[in-house]
Length: 107
Image 1 (cartoon, rainbow, N blue to C red):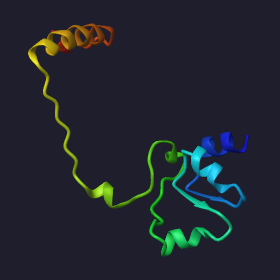
Image 2 (spheres, rainbow, N blue to C red; image 1 turned 90 degrees about the vertical axis):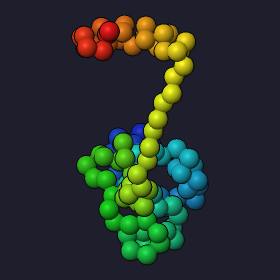
Image 3 (cartoon, helix red, strand yellow; image 1 turned 135 degrees about the vertical axis):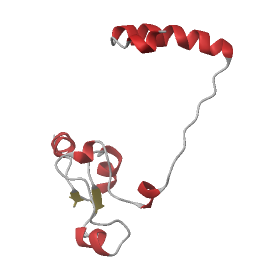
């Protein structure tokens, strides 16, 4: 029950003071920063231990994490599709676009 409530709240800071803290590490997913064990003070994460105080608030921990260097790295995505695969994908794309009333994508 505690996990369900914590996942729903998606707190900015979650401090777990439980002897089986690894269970929470394995099962919690919605939080800004997770502090595990009696010795892991939230203030350490905010100030000196590597994470920081720029964390998602108001349940944003459900879909994003805290600020880290990776947020500043530009990523590139690309696709290359063969002629044969394009025919097959085109059929699916056209059908899906029709369901979504996106006429320009159905052709």
